[in-house]
Image (cartoon, rainbow, N blue to C red; front, side, top):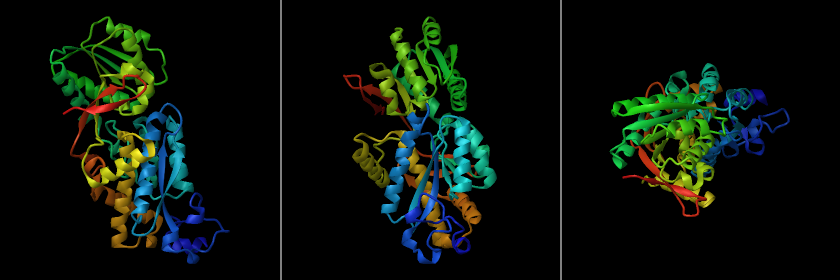
Length: 401
């Protein structure tokens, strides 16, 4: 039976009856399957556990909605897609294991993931060496697309997002002069983001009065917060993950700081609200997605997300959806040129990578495309301010005009 599969799709199509496992000698012969009962496996290696799960699970939610949406639209010209999930955890080892499993055991055509830039710098080279396309949904650190020829991302780089939130802060409070900076020193994304923030601060002629470092695993920030507050800053800028950043904001406010706070990309999740509660109110966050973006696919995505979760979709869910969409759209173009079931797996992966980079996409994020090295090109960006409900238990991102 394996020889029959190799002569058609080289193991990349899975029977619907066994969509979660590879073919085995006990499965029905490939000749007894039909176009409507086969599936194309796409790997999803995102954080579902650990401190990264606050953002990773949101991307998972978006990816699952994409699977439902595109299969309802007919999949790849009649062939359904099947997302194969592997928990990438919160560290490099988790992402590496997830990538290796998806590539060697599950024989996926491409991978959506991982959740963090720190993981990407370790796991993406594995996929690149195996010539398996990777589309990063939330990896914004400088240098991620340059990891390799088979690496792209739909997450706009921090070089574009960070300056936007600083400009918004100055618009709200023109007398800002003194800035305190915080960042997670053990996270590649936070290190990259704080470098961009610090340059943007200097470009605006502002003074960085202190740089406070912390770990993504920290829970007590009293020392760093007190040191910064004693210097009387007009603005605080924080780069970290959702869990540590939320606790840091809470402790900064509890110690009496009432000025503006800018949060980095790690703040782009409603999961931060339960951490700092009412004290989240007023934090500024640059975003690459707005639920109000008016195109057909975002309307469909937003409607499906609200139906499922009773709230507007956050950025990380939109990026998870978009990463899957890019792979589906690219596969559709390839199948129009030559039936993908006739392509050996290595050839299909290479063709998929080439088409991802060559394509133009209308997504929930708006119109996007890619540079030759895999960097996303996106038209619109936003800045939001967190507005907590009076009870302090939940809130929303209010987009500034």
